[in-house]
Length: 194
Image (cartoon, rainbow, N blue to C red; front, side):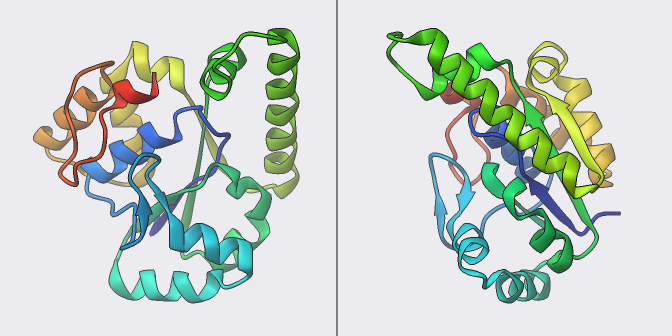
């Protein structure tokens, strides 16, 4: 059973959705400092960027039997992650390039160039993940939307979570666009990121 879950994939691909699902399933996904809109743990991200990651990991390990974090750019730090994390599970979720580009850029001028930029960045992320030789589990945003219950059950299985029916139901409803449902900490609904 994994003790630490790292969501490492590309921005705007569904990383916040996966973090929300895990939180609902009972995995603490943020520390005391977090970005409410993005569900990103500010302490973890800062520690990775400044070389103090081992310290924050030791603190979180002391606080939690199992915990996780979401940092879309974390694939750049996979060697550090693998060195510091206790029994890690790496999750990478992907969405099609056009949808990601629409989330990243509100205007459609030079649209094809922007899609090309997104595809190049996807390629860099995939190359980095492959070069690490770590067992990264790939997830599909489209499958999450089309088969939400199966997606939630797959995440629970990968994370070794034996979740109660109520939690599985709440996590499944969290995926529904514009549902207005929020996990217990008051995070925005998934409709905000569609």
